[in-house]
Length: 186
Image (cartoon, rainbow, N blue to C red; front, side, top):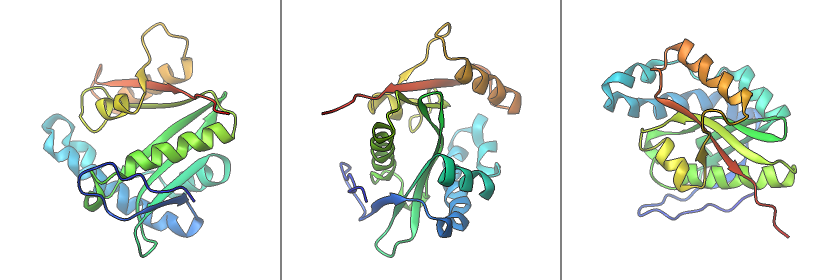
């Protein structure tokens, strides 16, 4: 178990633990709840109705990747992070926090647990794709030490993901790939 990191004004008691198969039915609800915040951005409001990651994808992250949940005092998931390993990097596929638990430190704690897992697995970096300017996306990850991958950097997998996202309907130029190098300790 990883300790909760509560460095926010109004934390809720939660614990970070690996995702179990029994958690999977709760993850779609969390992702749908998390997506409702996009209703506040008219050009992105369509994201509130997007389908969440399918259960099979979560199961693959549990089996072959990395997956953590933040659970409340009743051991009910309130946030999750699902990731996969690619060429020495740990790629965050999805990070979602239920609306009732947003801005309470869950996402930050999940990132910390994921970084510790990447260190344990001997990986080089955490990667993700996200919105550049949405406050709880790009700016949030920047505060956690992620840096935008610049055009021309040698990250073909991330470049391909951004292209695929635009084909899916994300407005061109609004997304970026980000990377955080893993600092080995000890």
